[in-house]
Image 1 (cartoon, rainbow, N blue to C red):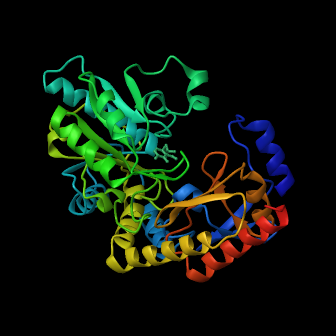
Image 2 (cartoon, rainbow, N blue to C red; image 1 turned 90 degrees about the horizontal axis):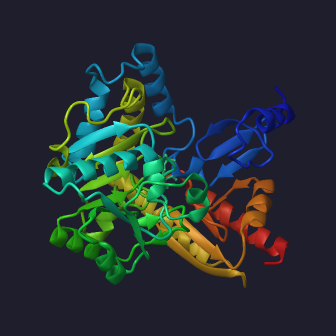
Amino acid sequence: MKAEEIIHGEATLIVPTYVRPPMVFARGEGCYLFDTDGKSYLDMAAGIAVMALGHSDPAWAAAVAAQAAELTHLSNLYHSRPHVELAARLVAHSFADRVFFCNSGTEANEAAIKFARKWARSEGEEGRTGILAFEGSFHGRTVGALSATAKERYREPFGPLMPGVVFAPYNDLAAAAEALTPEVCAVLVEPIQGEGGVRTAEVGFLQGLRRLCDERNALLIMDEVQCGLGRTGTLWAHEAYGVTPDMMSVAKPLAGGLPIGATLVTERVARVMEPGDHGSTFAAGPLVCRAALVVVERVDRPEFLAAVQAAGAHLRARLEGLRSERLVEVRGAGLLLGVEFREAVKPLIAAAAEEGVLLINAGENVLRLCPPLIVTQAQVDRAVDVIGECLERLGW
Ligand code: PLP
């Protein structure tokens, strides 16, 4: 199939929920993608903060090929080793005592919501089913996770959604204290709001949420689907806050590009769940878990995380050096950075793609940079040089 045929096929055969730029990718290597004409693109989006080790990492590809030749899928009816090895690794390097595996970030949040409700019930509080979430949040597209996602454009066509979700302004602890009523069993928060425009939680906000949850016997759930697993320069984003949650959802980078989600929980939560309470056919298969082990073993090393911090600091410094009257601010942490402009960044993204640099947005006006965690300083320099040239070309 030629590139035009593929683009035409998508337009006519696929349910039209996405808008895509006019290139077709055929191959990836490290921080580069190659289209069907062989043109190379420096990938500063990493499949939306997924490809932590870059594309086609040789050790990852070898492990996946070996596991595929050995055992791919079993269902959760049977035991297998990679599942337990992955859980052991995650538990050893987090606050959690146990893990529930699923297939996406949305599902990881969906599980967290169900676990919180069952936990509240086990505390003898039947009517306590509410969730406190925040303005600007994104937790997924299934009905439960969507109910905790603030964006009206995503919610409005699909109502009525799950009742009991209340929203407070992000980083407003007083408003959260007011919204955390006796009907609320859990607080669901992103340490950095990714889709909501790369907005970073203030230290006092997350610490205050922890305190409020302790005082009112509610669970604190952190959604680290986008910001977790090394992206901010620590293994988990919440480490920088000196706060631990009761549950944490992880997904995007975990299996190096294969679909996976994980809800990490403390024993206090895990003990309320029984066989049959929740499940998934595909979750935690040997193939995806073996792939995830490669990622976690690589990322969870001091020298890897130090390199993310260094690359993130360099990227931030370079972005802060951009001169544009339309640039409002640079924000975020590590290699999850946002550059807010006074207007929609779509033309900037299109101009950079022409120059061979892939960028994405986070909301209308925010350029989001979330490259593979292996990005080099030279690649960062190239990306920011191209952004600077495009700003000039657009007259921004
Ligand atoms: N939570 C956060 C913070 C996210 O950024 C996303 C996706 O962007 C999700 C949940 C949903 O994850 P998925 O698309 O894997 O279902």
